Image (cartoon, rainbow, N blue to C red; front, side, top):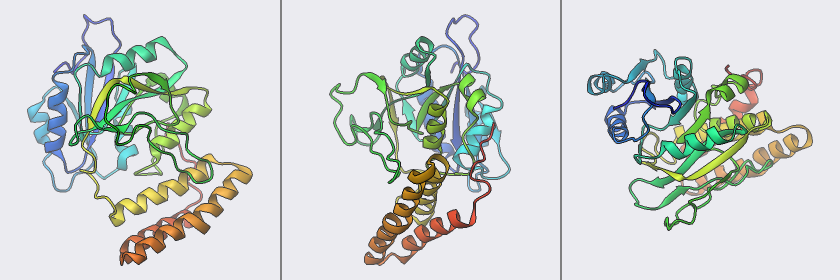
Length: 309
């Protein structure tokens, strides 16, 4: 595994960063897929986010060249990644979920794209579902609607027959795999840790776009995602942070009348509708998680504009 700077390569160093939380076995599978990576110049950081029920030392034992960082508390997705940013030496930083596996040549197209166009601030590859072969999870995003704070994944559920093998601007980035120039992070700042989980990559993309950069999708690169290993779908934990992040995104990125309309929509229509649907399904715990996310945004005001740099 070429996890240190290859002095014989003219290609720029890429720092690959992934976060582990109670999933050392999954992380080892990810690292095994990187062994076949054909890009010759990269380093790897694995941040263990204070896993309470795991033995992350096995990662370092299995792959000694990996930089294993162990935090003292769970810093969330953004915070865990940010710890490694402070140590990364690469010209480009790849933030990638540990529940993914990569194609051998996945890095070359994205690096070439960023090298060819300094106006691009971040790029994501196409994402397939790992357990549903050749099926898209992501081939770009529509823009996030300023009022509803929703978007959709282009290609979602489609079979890959080459229809998205292009390289185009996209409405937002996909946090499961995103390559970003270090100079852009130095200019704009790291992911905001106020999110903890969900919407932090969209917030980051919005900030990077506001700084004058473009967000791209590169269909020449492929990553396979083992969706929902780390969080259970429709759990109170997931729904709290998902809806908390959705409201928080609107508060941080909308201004004036658009911000007012968005908050009125979220609090007056969207969130009550979601809670009502869960109550009809006899899931008061899930409805309560949505209500809790709304209340969090009411009671937390001063720190919403915190951007770690």
